[in-house]
Image (tube, rainbow, N blue to C red):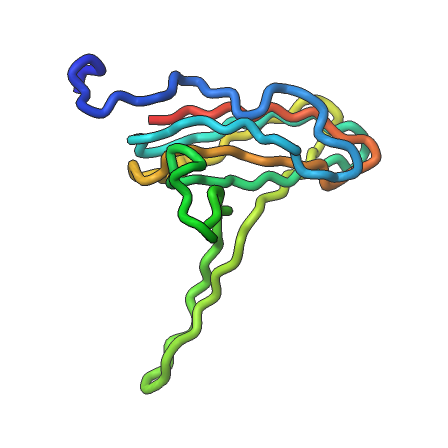
Length: 157
């Protein structure tokens, strides 16, 4: 469909910088205010990471957070505006017995293999036109005393 005739125009322009290249917070703290972006009506998102370790053993953790709400005022009382990605493990199936499966919040870790800048791609992440906003928070997890530099860029379709 041509963008001009799309009844649901997108509210984003690719590429989207979710984290400008900068040092991660000190002492292994999560980013205090991760950059959020609108992704309404998007099908998928692919993330590109560029990390330069700050010291030997440098690594970082990152976590995708999504919101199904366009604005904070739409969040029902008692509900979370931002929810964290999850990991699911199906339980064993046995005849005649109910199965218990596990679900838990998830984060990913990346450890540098050398001293220079390293990059990788993650995705596509299925958004399925159900997510309004996304953000990615990050923290140094390897050499917390010498945080590395991280950039995160997204491509949304």
